[in-house]
Image 1: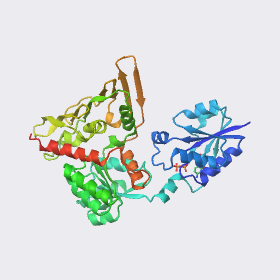
Image 2: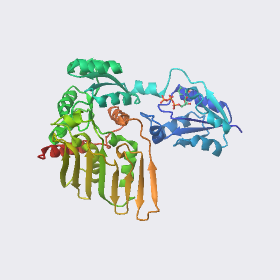
Image 3: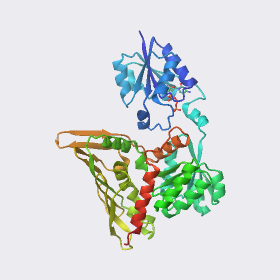
Image 4: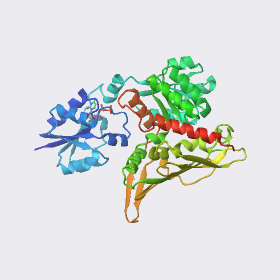
Amino acid sequence: MIKVITYGTFDLFHEGHYRILQRAKALGDYLIVGVTTESYDKNRGKLGVIDSLATRMENVKNTGFADEIIIEEYVGQKVLDVQRHNVDIFAIGSDWVGKFDYLKEYCKVVYLERTKNISSTDLRKIKYPVQRVGIIGNGRIANRFVVEAKFVSGANVQNVYNPRLESAGRFADKWELTAFDDLEKFYAATDLVYIASPHETHYEYIKSALEHKKHVLCEKPMVLKKSQAEELFDYAQKNNLILFEGIKTAYCPGFNKLLGIARSGKIGNIRNIEACFTKLENKNHRELTDLNFGGSFLELGSYVVFPMLKLFGTNFKNISFETTTADNGLDIFTKVSMSFPAGLATATCGLGVKSEGRLLISGTEGYIVVAPPWWKTTEFEIHYEDPNIVEKYNENFFGDGLRYELSDMLYLINGIEKNSFKLTAKDSIALAEIMEKFLAVER
Ligand code: CTP
């Protein structure tokens, strides 16, 4: 009996999938089909898959070609599967030519001609119209956003707005976008607005974008007043619009794995959290020169208080700030102490002081320590009283991470997911409240 194996995501099952399974089966007597898990696809950077694993497996089964369906969940699994199942032929589409030659040591490798003019990516575009993305504010982060957005199918960065047309024009030339200095025209050409303008302008831009019925992804800190956050989320909800705060950590796969494990009771009840994020900033940059809205906490505070809100909730009892300031009065290092009904938290951040960027979560049975940079979580460990027991976890984090927030936002816009549990309106409102309290402190 000749055994054949093939793999795929098989999202939005199409003719190309049907034909490859048909031809793979014809190569032998017994066909094994490996279908990828959501987390495997995420881990290899394939974002935007729509059908669940169960649906994708069901669709493969319905072709009648597969004698056995297995799940592909990690890199390197193919070598093991081929040996475990005594596979004679590994078959895959011609888009992968050469990529699986390493399997020739174990079986025959066949690349089958790919069916022309059809792919899951194309079908996703038909099913869910591509969101035309427009950027407001073309500073450093906006450059990174354009690069990251290219990894997300379903969104196309097309426009940039800046009241100074010359500035928008330079950015547009660099990234092949259309520049606008007229907001009305910009909104008319845009479905999803990414706001990366200075912090203090966010509120007005979000408000006007929502009023023009646009979905909004806004850089952190989204707004600097609790009442503003409440008003904006209320408006967005009433108008069926998606309003997202862009804190990349919130959407990072490793960080979400960490939250799940922390909440699972593995370290008992969580009683203390410490988070630190420092980034030595150029002294001439806005972050260290804007006397009203510069400084470490406005820049990095959203990150460092975020784990506390996710693990202890948004009902903090006390919050206090201590800062070290530069000659111009801006905080170059800030320490925030918070107390919650369940425990204590300390968040530190700095643009002018360097420290270790780690996150420590302490519980009644053990602790979790996340390796720097924890805000792009890739590795963490669980320790217990017995120092010989250490559990290690890891997860990929691609590029700058902005792709994850955009991808999650599209799931909501397209109705594939129903709620933004990773960073809720309640979380963003609490973050705005904390910013407001920080700004209210006399320095
Ligand atoms: N395939 C094919 N012809 C197509 C599309 C896919 O033969 N037109 C094959 C692939 O080469 C692979 C298998 O089907 O062997 C599963 O591919 P998958 O990545 O799931 O499908 P795509 O349509 O390529 O998905 P995407 O657009 O998300 O990359």
